[in-house]
Length: 414
Image (tube, rainbow, N blue to C red):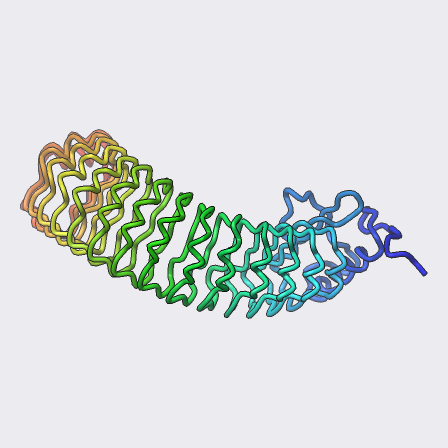
């Protein structure tokens, strides 16, 4: 009887017979699909550069396997013999299920199964005690197994674009989770235990049917990125202001918000804020406290004015306000000395402040679809202006300085 530990060579790598048989089974599937020429073994690649199709080995054992976009409809049962695997990528196939034998891969740290046709995940995944990342975006998952709560080392859980309506309440036990993507599912609510995940850095619950957020969202004080866009939120909890570590992105767009919580002023480290596609009629004066903002998007609302305090956003580089009801602009807009993009199209502006000429870094100015009769001459002195869009206004006659702008290379649309 031959021991399972007896080694033989596969594509120049000495491996146990059991692992060689697993690779040969995979090789046969790929050859049958036309993704590997007959007689050619799986390529050997470096683990830190593995992509496409191939495997890497270490200490005479397979530690990484990639089978991306090979049109596989199933994985062979023998894959469970690759018990030293740390990395498995089966992205972009036609898998409707993952075999329960994956539960034998107890050393697995990263599992990628994005862009398949999975309707469920095997309960045996709960045996993968060393798993740190689970990626199953773009599938047809209707539920997650309760056993997922046993993955005590899990840091990343991405199940974007599935059919989930609930998640196990026990998920709140996974204290090491740092990044969760539950976007583009069918949630109307999340269990209260979810907000116990206080080590989260990134949370994406966008594109669901959420009508409210728990006050306990304010307990997620390590978050640096939060996406709750494309839901049905009518209000936001005041506890949102507790998230003072939000530094990268806050997406609140495509909801039904009519006002913002006062506590938003506490997010003084935030770099990007998207408020677009809501029902806001005004921005609070306290928005001027968001002194780290580099980009503010508030288009597709019902804004009639802007607060004077907007001039305090001296780090702002892009301001997008199209499709509102703005009839005038505050003079303080001229204090946005780092502004490069200003989009004011489709409002009700009849004039622009002369002080806009102070925005010396402005590259893009779009005021089309307003009610402008004339323009301040100071715009002609903007040294970095590369595009000026004036279409669909009532400007009586082109000014000489507009011609100068065009001659120096600025694209002017009239």
